[in-house]
Length: 96
Image (cartoon, rainbow, N blue to C red; front, side):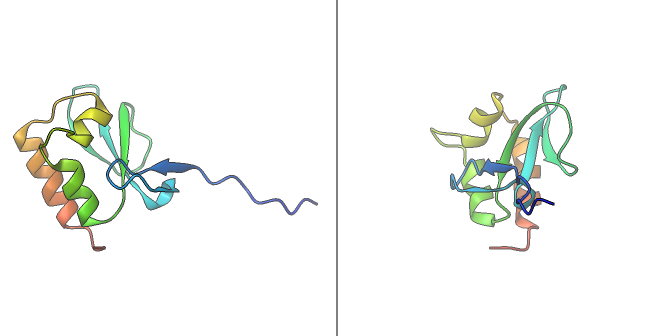
């Protein structure tokens, strides 16, 4: 019997650039229709990006600045309505 550790998938938060286990991050996905939304199960089809469960990471990723991290990571433009929805979703997260 082997006592080796099982592989834990890791992803990088697009805001703070920290590498964390995949289960500790929230995946946002650009759907086939072009909508950007949280991927609750983590397996929806489409291009994905990961964010920490911290409000400051959500704020940084959703900032409409020169970098526009989320739009760049998902290779799409994000509508103001979609950005507002994601912002309110991020504010509901418990961790600060």
